Image (tube, helix red, strand yellow):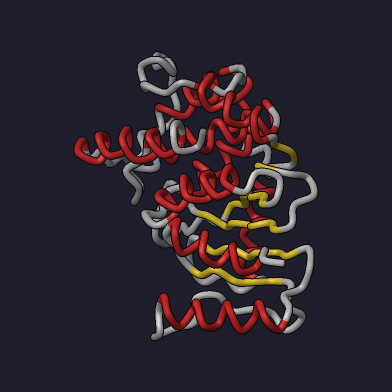
Length: 260
């Protein structure tokens, strides 16, 4: 499902928008007049994916996974955008075994719109629930060319497409009602060692065995000898991912950490 839905939206649609090179300033505020159909995005298709996998507490996937990936992300980060469909595809590939939790880590020194967009997305989630949150997240990454390229006028239409009332959404954004949640996520990201985006922490239900550690170290060296891609915590229950990892590299590491 992810290969049929999220990857096409995040790459094909966004690829077309990159050619448009839309760059607006922070003074741009959401207005009315755009519909989700005009954006070329189908909320129904995203809903189908979410229903097939399950979503809860901003987590896509199982409530009791063997592996949980917590991603700290900036909605205007050019590396976060391609990582988004990769994580969605991973969750589907390992349905029931891997879950993915999204947390806000906007970097305003690099992307002036990122904090505003993060709060708007949080409004969508608070008003519409977890399903609406992931629909909105997918739509934003599908539509932004990254690097402050999202037209902020799209946000109310994204909210409506996710099932949120437009007036309630606009009021939420204007009041900065949930900015404390965005700030808390960002502080948490720094606390776990994030220095950029995307930054992810992989939590394992069971600690890595000595055999798994050795296999992961060998795989790490084989993939990229110049730096450690998969540093493991002392207790063997956490792995840190600093940056965007291609699908096949992610899959290779997961095969090791989930092997018997």
